[in-house]
Image (cartoon, rainbow, N blue to C red; front, side):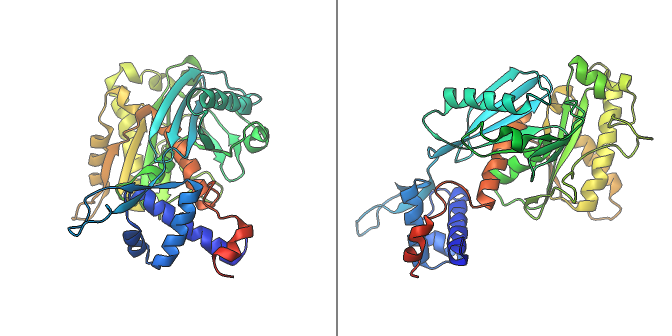
Length: 383
C-alpha cells in the first residue's frame, strides 16, 4: 500500500472509530473533533456510506427557518457480525456480536478438547453459530479465548495447564482454510481486557487491570490445579500489553514456595474445598488481593475490572482488594482506583474475544469496507 493510500485508510479508520464512539454525530462535529478539513471528512464519509459501514439518520428539529432536519452519522450495526468463543476444558461459551458491540445471541455447550481437535472444534462452533444466528450477515471475524500461554501474534498455544496442552499448538495453521473469515486466538484474561478496551463507549480507557478469576468444579480441574484459576489482562496506554515474550498477565502468588502448577500457597486439597469452607475461601481471596494490590499500586492503574465466576463464591473481592490496596500504599493521599465487577460475568471471555477481533481489524485497518479500492484511490485523492 502506498503512503498516500495508507494515510487515507488510516484517516478512514479514525473517522469510523469516532463515529462508533459518538453515535449520531454530525459531519461538522466530526471534523472539529478530529481536526480535519470538512472536505476530507465529506469524502471519507461518502466512502464509508457507500461501503455500508455507517448510515445517515435524520434526527432532532429543523431550524426556525425551516428546511431539512439535521443529518447525523451512526455505525450500521447490521453491516456484519463477530463471533467470540471461550474454549475451556469441558465446555464452550460463544456469543454473536454486532458492529455496535451489542451481544445478539449466546450459546453454551459441552466439548471434549484435545490438542488434535482444538481447531476443528472451533470451526464446528463457528459453523453452528453462523447458521443459527448470522447466516444473513457478513461474518467479520472470529475470536477465541482460552487458558494458558498464548502467542497471539503467531496464533499459537504454547502451553496450557487447564487444557493439558504440553507442546505448541499452531492454531493459525490448523484453522487455515476451515473458515471464510479471519480467526484469532488469545489468552482468556487478555480477551477480557480486549472486551473492555474495544466496546467501552463511556471513556477512553488507558491504564487498567482485568482480573479473570474462575472456579471450576469438574473433577479434572480440581485434581489438576485445585479448580481455581487466575489470569490478568494488562492494558497500558490504551493497548493490551503482552510483554517481551507474549506472556504478560500470567499469575502465580508471591507466597508460593518452589515450583508447581498451583497458583496459590494453599494445598490442592484446601483449594478443592473453597466453595464449602469460608475460612479457606477468605484466605485464598485475601492472598490474591495482596498480590493484586502490589501490582495495582506499582503500575498506577486507573481501573480494575474483575470477571469470571468469582461472584458465585459469595465473597466481596473488591472490598478485600480495597483494604489491601490501602495497606500497600505508603503515602497519605489515597489512591483513586475504580474497582468493579465486569458486567458480563461468565460471558466476559467470549465477548472479549469478539472485541479482540474488532480491535485487531481496526488496528490493522483490514475491516472490510474501510479501505478504498487501491485502483481508484489515486483518482479520489487527487493524484
